[in-house]
Image (cartoon, helix red, strand yellow):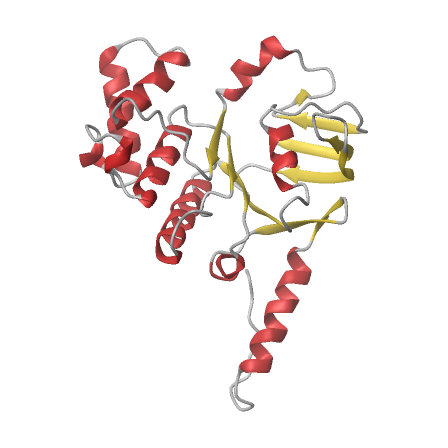
Amino acid sequence: MLVDYQKVNIYHQEGKPVLSGVDFHVDEGEFIYLIGRVGSGKSSLLKTVYFELDIEEAEKATVMEQDLRTLKRKHVPALRRQMGVIFQDFQLLSDRTVYKNLRFVLRATGWKGKKQIDERIKEVLSDVGLEDKADKMPHELSGGEQQRIAIARAILNKPKLIVADEPTGNLDPETAENIIRLLRHISQTGTSVIMSTHNMPLLDKYPGIVYRCENGSLREVTNDFNRMECADDADEAPADTQQPTSMA
């Protein structure tokens, strides 16, 4: 299991409680949505998964088999190399090309040979459909293209897990759908994806496991969400064509 949280309490860095009694689990190849209002704790939960926010109170809290309650900070960089993180605001380095953005990550994570670096960059740009953008500066790309480059950066080291914090928040609906389709494809290759989102229609089109942050707690609502969608569809369908829908 890549993430195994049992009865975890999560606090802001200043000590304010955010979520309590969290049970949260991620297995290989799963696609998981985190939903909830702004400030409900989605980002804080994600920050614990990629080691930005410490966990001190928990019955169990492991990420990639590492106990977060006793994890030493010196071990965090090695663990992060097994993980990709995608942000809403892309966080590309604005003073260098796409190629140099990706090369910077590879060198920082221990890659040395130019040939191997070039081949890996070519591979990930192909994966996200932007082979012709290697020499472009970030400001020369559209928002959707910048997010695709951010995804390419996240998969450079073939991670076991991708954590995506509102990756479609700044994108138009069509581009957002393309990004979700790409992340879904990545999950089908065996890499797990945890994604926070406010874009509820995407959950219907690209179903996954759903957790809701609400009132200081986290609940898995996958089945509830399915029933809600079925009821909505039934209400809207003509009487002679009503059929149950499925998120599966």
